[in-house]
Image (cartoon, rainbow, N blue to C red; front, side, top):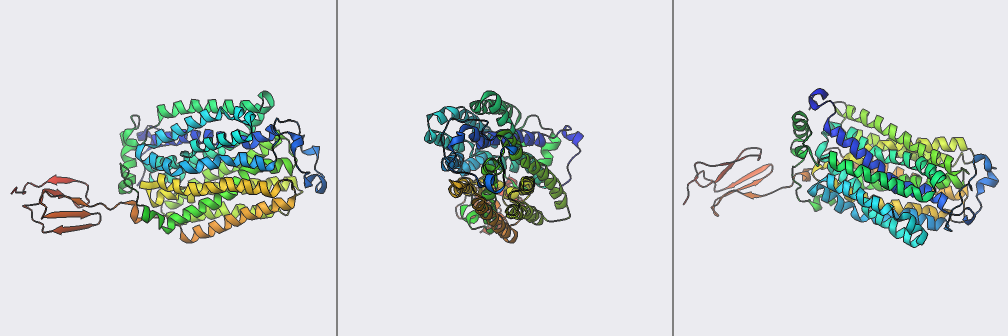
Length: 514
């Protein structure tokens, strides 16, 4: 269905206003999530390093990469403890995925997404105090932060299901989820600047305060759906509902759990998410540590170099989504576009990670390859990430909650694996193992998705309901979507008449009461 002219939709369509606000929410969501990945470099004492980096001897790296000890931290935490702190977020994050998605479908994504970030902001204020109380206390607070943010991604899928016309899903989803890259891009340099001028504690106070300000704007501007939005034009509202058609119910139907859990396309999304997150969070969580320990970068250079690849990912994701939506509009099927984008997003980074093992002492080549690896991951938002809305828009939030809950496991297992491999062994040989494992996950999930993924709405998206439309117990009209079975039907006994598409019910004037 062709979209109305932008002039008729108020020049800036409300669905794009919603997407931009959700994008900003994702920016703050990721800032609160990842700020500790860089800040921990300044929190830990430099003389606490339990090993000597092989890079200094093999590659001759030294102070030419910057003074890595320019910030003297307060805490004596080894690599294993640091991996527990950064990974603890996901111990809490996993538990609110499915409830968050379902709550967004039933109560509205606006409340769930905004409420989650209000809670996350408040928790973030307590991180400095928790750190000074000890590593265990900090780990507990990080778990609570994860619990708070767990509903954010599933609720935005429910938001997309309500606001995004099918042929704009790639674009709108990428606008929203690109906020995670933008948050990383902003979080690392901003954290470095704050650390240098105000100390590491201020990172958490300032970013939490900014997030609370956004939360206020979110609740003032965004509505759960076009029907409840008071500022949307009637033209845009009707266009969105006409585009969604029968695929999206106005009220959340019950989840068909058996059909969902036995759906192969659903499992293709889940496995793609698990494999993606192993590689993604290995890079997101441990890239600053690799920059510091193996490339010998100081915290300011580290912040820029760790954040820049996510700028590439952001830009690439916007390009891929724009191209993907246009290819879907008559050239390629949704399934083909999803598989193509996902293959680029996973096989490309796998090749890059394997390539890193050949350029270990070449700083420029290493940084360039890492940049390409992260950039290519921008294809995920046109690949598996939005595929839930394709196959079951009625349950997009719940499905995303399930798949993201499973995909959360690598979020803490991957950093712990890196910590176990490199604790006391900062050598290229140990980091090669890290890259090999991530590359294997990328390739395995890409193959599974390529074979089993689907771009079509699944039959179980429309829940089969049985309605009895008669007051006479012996003469019933039993209606099921796609099937009408009349038992002893007689116009004299049928209380209601239902039209062919089951949308309207009329009182039968021929009905005769006994």
